[in-house]
Image 1 (spheres, rainbow, N blue to C red):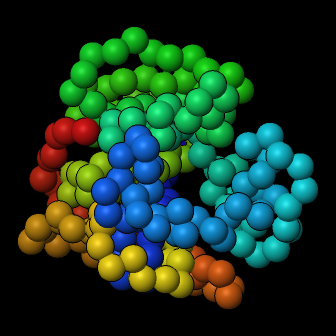
Image 2 (cartoon, rainbow, N blue to C red):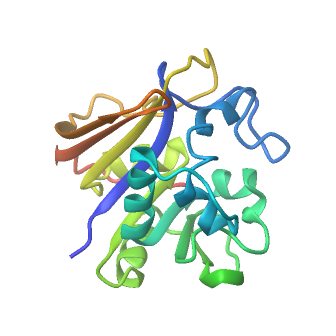
Length: 213
């Protein structure tokens, strides 16, 4: 039985995007620096149709995360900022977009489909679990969607890749969790000069239900 896993990169001061993010600047000002650790990895280059790349510990962590995902959940803002990831997105699995706008499912090259879910994160995760075929459901972002899933008690595991940099401002990963208690149990730490990978089991989360996209 697969798990629901949050997997995202953040700056050391807790931002997942810089200031003024949008379709013209998907990761905000300076936000592209967050993901410098992945661009030369073999496990990142392959699903993007690129050859070569480094095969190291960071590449293994990324390969593990990508290989365990049977479906993905993202928010509408992330989808819009990425402009739908083009004609051949890197997911190659069903993706469920949390939104308020009714929209037909989009089938892309490489096996990626985008299904637009208008009745909240719980329904999106439910559909993703059904589509994942026993593999994990990855909640890839953005921050609002991750916060909603955590507050709704939907997340089993949290993996945060901490890039060694400060952004100073932008979109904070854990900005809107409120006073609800979410307990974490650390299960793994892997570090390299480029990034530190932290994995937590979500031991207990709130039963509060959130909706939106």
